[in-house]
Image 1: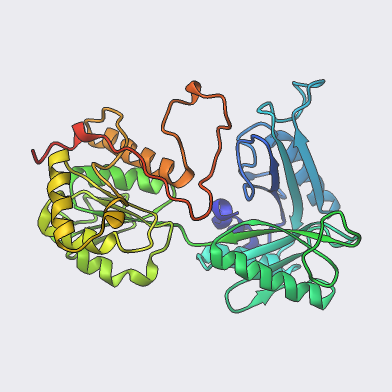
Image 2 (image 1 turned 30 degrees about the vertical axis):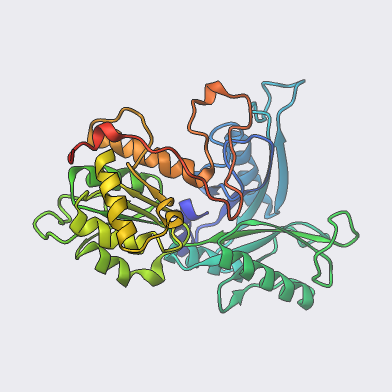
Length: 393
């Protein structure tokens, strides 16, 4: 719901009834993952998507029916060999979609959840997707220090809140299967309750250092990918909001000093793109960045620039393991030349690193298309895009 939270909040504030369909389970190949959402209001207006088009029409009708009946439903959509052209997923996957009507003011959990999501406050929304009669769709909204809504019995609610808070702390979305006493159990057991817990956390950050033409293109594609983008440069004549309209903020400061001021706002999803290729800026910045638990650090420059920069970083005390985290020259080898092409190259490497992509044309393989990086795993990728980075030879 994070993608459509602003529209849901507007509907909610105006007292308008609506229904939300959320993907709560995926088996096999599917165009969108758990958490994808579509909403329909009482007038038939629709926002969001659950499948990229495969089953949108059927889900829309389910939302309309839920608004009319007031009932929550769980629907399963999959590919059928017998009815290949019927409603289903021709990619071969199976989606489970929870459709729940929302009446503003009637459900404390959803009321609070929608407001918190729209405000950017970290919150986990736990919804019952299977269990005893009457519990389907019941929800609890959980933050780091409070929760909204209730689940009977009380011991089950306490367990759900604790488990949801742990998932929120890790920024993860997943399923819980609990017994009536709140203990994890086999989903085939009697009286079990299955919940879908979706963690909503602020957008990941992209810090772009160096107010150059390449930075404008990288900021643009970073925002397109869903990052909150900051452009930082020590030169006020170049670091202006007018030059970087797609950045969420433009900061005039020495890069390493600005990074030091942001330590409490960085996490494993944070991306750093160092585009200055000037040792005065690069070395102090990278000396700090490569020792931080961020998701990606890339630096622009030719191969000679990279070798000289690496030597200076070794002199500054960085280990080979720390240097191995640096993606330089930044980006995948797409043969990029223009700032826009280079931005695509950089974005491709960031996505591949985050998702564990093999960086080959999809048509060359026969395995799964979607594959996430295992928790805690690191993936080194061959760097390229040098042809767009020949400023310093």
